[in-house]
Length: 335
Image 1 (cartoon, rainbow, N blue to C red):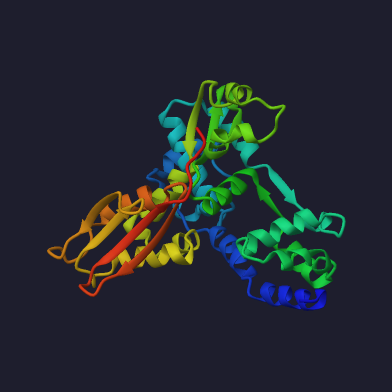
Image 2 (cartoon, one colour; image 1 turned 30 degrees about the vertical axis):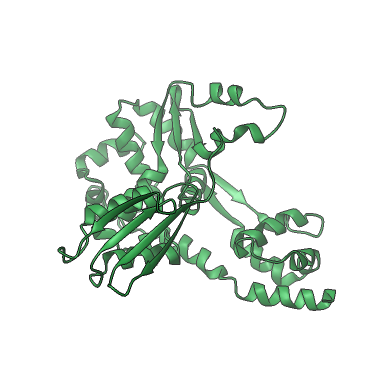
């Protein structure tokens, strides 16, 4: 196959990439969908926290600042308020929360357009790997240097990634994209705040020969801190019954994950059975005596199966009317 033909095939592959899906997720998560009552807070309590400068920089629909119905949050701001509630429940000082808020809501300018060029093929290569799930053949990858010279391609990638985002937004988007990792924030004395990815901590020895794992651990997770799991907030949000068809829940799940959850909640199956790790363990989560699966079982499935690290999920149906879900352990974490 000639180089020109390879390039043409690559461009055909790129046409199948749903760039708009990433824009859709950003747009939906930026919608002002939540009000104070969604957080379980009173308007008075919110106003006190606002006076203490620990609430997000929310824009209001109206000049009347005392009425809670005028205060609306997008998903990132909603998560921040959930973090504040958790920190205050654990006695973390107001002044430290304010300092952490300043750090997490600082805007980061992601100007990928400045970095995309023929001199930086690795950056474009990583983006291609991301959007094609690493399924391009070796031959097609080799023509990437020709493709990135195409102005239309550069403009498309640049428009997708060049934008301002806050640190908290970046962390939340990472947690959504990597649901099977445990991602969160560590809050230290004095308002210092660091993002934690526990999978990276576990495999840290592979990063760099001159960086010792023990030094990183001593400087982070071994220091006294409060850990807040962003992954858990996302998992809890998705697993809430009243939010199962919420637009935000929909964009945080892949097509395959949505399909499995809809099958679980379907009333057409007699029995629903989960086979763990190639059938080494089996659990029946619905029997034919029940009209539909218990929502508590769906929540457990989301937390224990859908978010399980290093696993792959498939499902099949039987002639008897059963739904069989198989989970396969793809790899083990380094200890």
